[in-house]
Length: 195
Ligand code: AMP
Image (cartoon, rainbow, N blue to C red; front, side, top):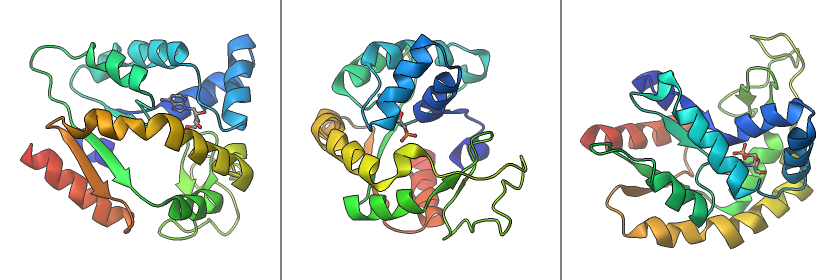
């Protein structure tokens, strides 16, 4: 929604890694093994892929990172990519572990166009097919309960410390994510427009 409204490409590291995993080469298999176990992909791979992505033409007037940075090392590295005059905003969407578990286990995804349906504000199509790609929606392996528990454990040990890292930064915003997506979207747009 934010990408559409402002015309900034959304760079989802999760989508980048799922595509890399599908390539089936040595690096792809290694990435898949990490994702399927609920572990983070190694920093040096994440950093080189994200850096290469933002150097592309479509990112020259802004971009949105989704799922990045997830470690202090990634955050520190990403700060080095900022150019004079660049404006940054960092959002932490605050939501309980229980709500994450509920939302992710309900999620069904199109592995082609990455559309997501959750049976709530985005109803599952009755035929179980992606309306755009006409292929069956799937539950991602890492959206299964056991893997989500591991992802949450990794989040608390490795990603949550980023909150302390960003806390003092003037462009850091903690936003309540417990409501519906439209409410969250509005809160984020208000912040972007006031910045
Ligand atoms: P997501 O779709 O953002 O939940 O990401 C799915 C999986 O991709 C994560 O559970 C990690 O295994 C991997 N991943 C995504 N973003 C990152 C990142 N910034 N650092 C390390 N691993 C990542």
